[in-house]
Length: 105
Image 1 (cartoon, rainbow, N blue to C red):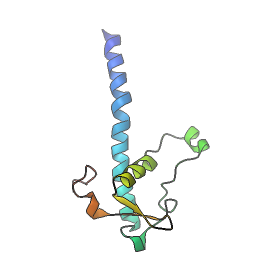
Image 2: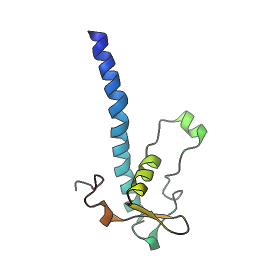
Image 3: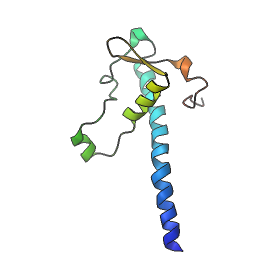
């Protein structure tokens, strides 16, 4: 009985913990864009300037997983984050409204 409960708890943690961490990372990425003022094409920043680049293999081996690069990809896919011709990115706050990424504030 105890082993079954531990297995169920383990499965729940494996499934739901990454979802929660990814959701938290989305809100962190939105705050990074706001902090850097990257809210339109004129004030767009590079991904490196925002420190949202994917970690190197060495970094991935030595640190906990960083969900922010994946969160950035999610925001780009839904159109909340746009890119300029030269590869810089910016947040479209009006696209946040009505999405699951809209802050509760």
